[in-house]
Length: 197
Image (cartoon, rainbow, N blue to C red; front, side):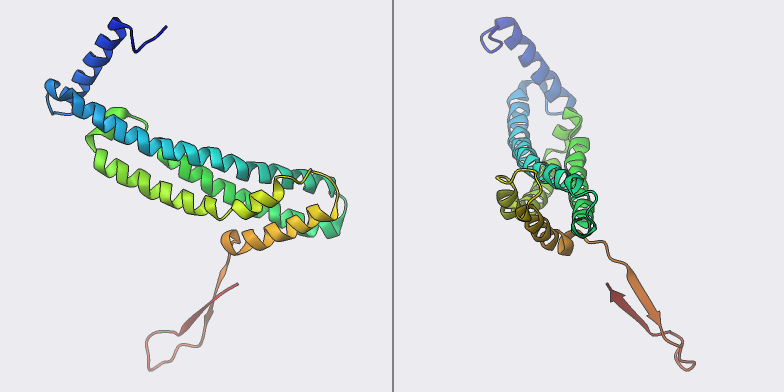
């Protein structure tokens, strides 16, 4: 059924927009503003959905890494690189998922969004920009992994090493060690140095 051409559906939509305008406190007659707000929000959310689609490529890399890891399950030399790569990519995927979840939570109710449209759009834009920058850095890794089948090969091991070099500086968890020297009795504060490993 063509909803756009159905007069009953059009009437219901117009009533809904008028009610939304009233709930927003701008008056039933200004329903076009509600339509404009929704169009602005829809454009921003479309960008997020495009990033979600792009994120699927990172998930493909993760699946291939897990597959290669299983193939080399009994070879310690291969697992020495496969295990850390699997852990690091898990952290990366979790970070992306948290960003997408944050958007989903923030954009759950349409009236709440419309009441704060400018701040919502600013929030969505900031998360979009963050996710976009992170995803763009994955392009070379995704391109290299895409044609490689999940099988035991030197190419798979080379890709694991390359992926480790990509992931480690971005997602390696660090522990901060604090070295406290003897406190100087004349000075009340102890000297502290932080070493990041």
